Image (tube, rainbow, N blue to C red; front, side, top):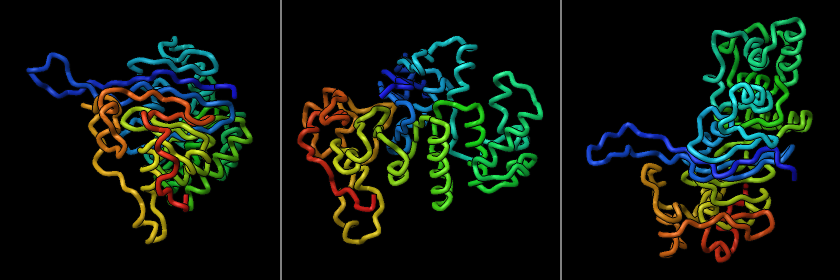
Length: 334
């Protein structure tokens, strides 16, 4: 697999405003902590985890919408971290994002045509008849009508607004799109339509996706590989078939077991994850998951587990990954 995007040792710490005269250094939130992964050409990598684990921050760091504290992001062999602003602007033609909230991500004062063509204007294009026609073609490609081009966002439903956001993202014909919870704000029936649309566009335009989500069934449907994130770190990566049938990290097992299932007996037999996610202001030493892990030993409290390959294509950051033995009450519905 040829890597289109490579993320290596990505770190982001946010300084807090908490004042403490006993501390000379302000506390920092360790939102992303040494994250590494790669996305191949025409591949979809799913990034899943609890709310607040750093998924969306990782996506914004890749696009340099937020400046990383440390680490490297290479796109088509070019380093993005610290790149010249003009070079970064040129590369952003191939790097786009679909935001989570279809209501907040569209400028209410702009017409749909202007919204869709905004990425092209940012690259130096000027309004023209050709671009107007192109905007109409994009609207039809995402299941809307050319007639919608002169309307404003408030005239559309949530699903239609997300389609407009998708049309804007594909307007510059990118090679890579970050889908940041792209369907989480939509009804289930509309989610299916948008997911199918994203898959059709990927096939037609030869794009790669980083699909950030928390709905495990949706991520399973669209992703080729899945990375599981916990408290700013990647704890497991695997092809989706292996991850859903034989998860090896205790957190991945608990995450899959927590998914809703439409059967009362299965619901009673599920293993539940106890405790709350620790604060990123003061994460646990060693393995961040050890306060909630049923397998935790003394080594987990002091030594960080390395993300290592235990099966072909399956990498796990756990000292006892070989002992986990696979599925942990994984719901059949997934």
